[in-house]
Image (cartoon, rainbow, N blue to C red; front, side, top):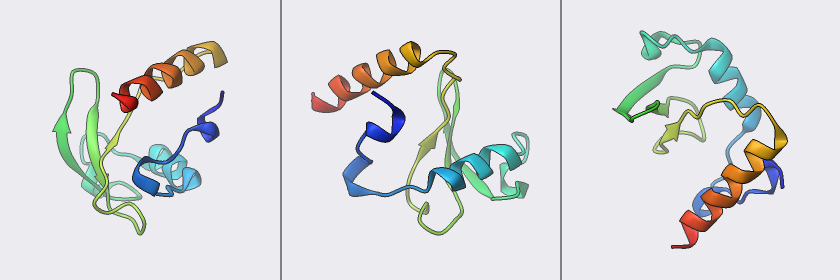
Length: 87
């Protein structure tokens, strides 16, 4: 299983290239001044939740996740994520 095998939530189609560009240009201290501006929606135990101020992303919440070091780590997360969303 890969990240592209995961269905987009509620039928949303999010541009993965845009997300990568967002990550590269993110200013964590001042996300509103990033290359692609963002608004902080909240702070979780591990990461920040953003609304990315770009076409196709407005009104959606984006939570950054730790980097997966192996395909196995990603697959285990995706399986858990899928089970969680079926509940």
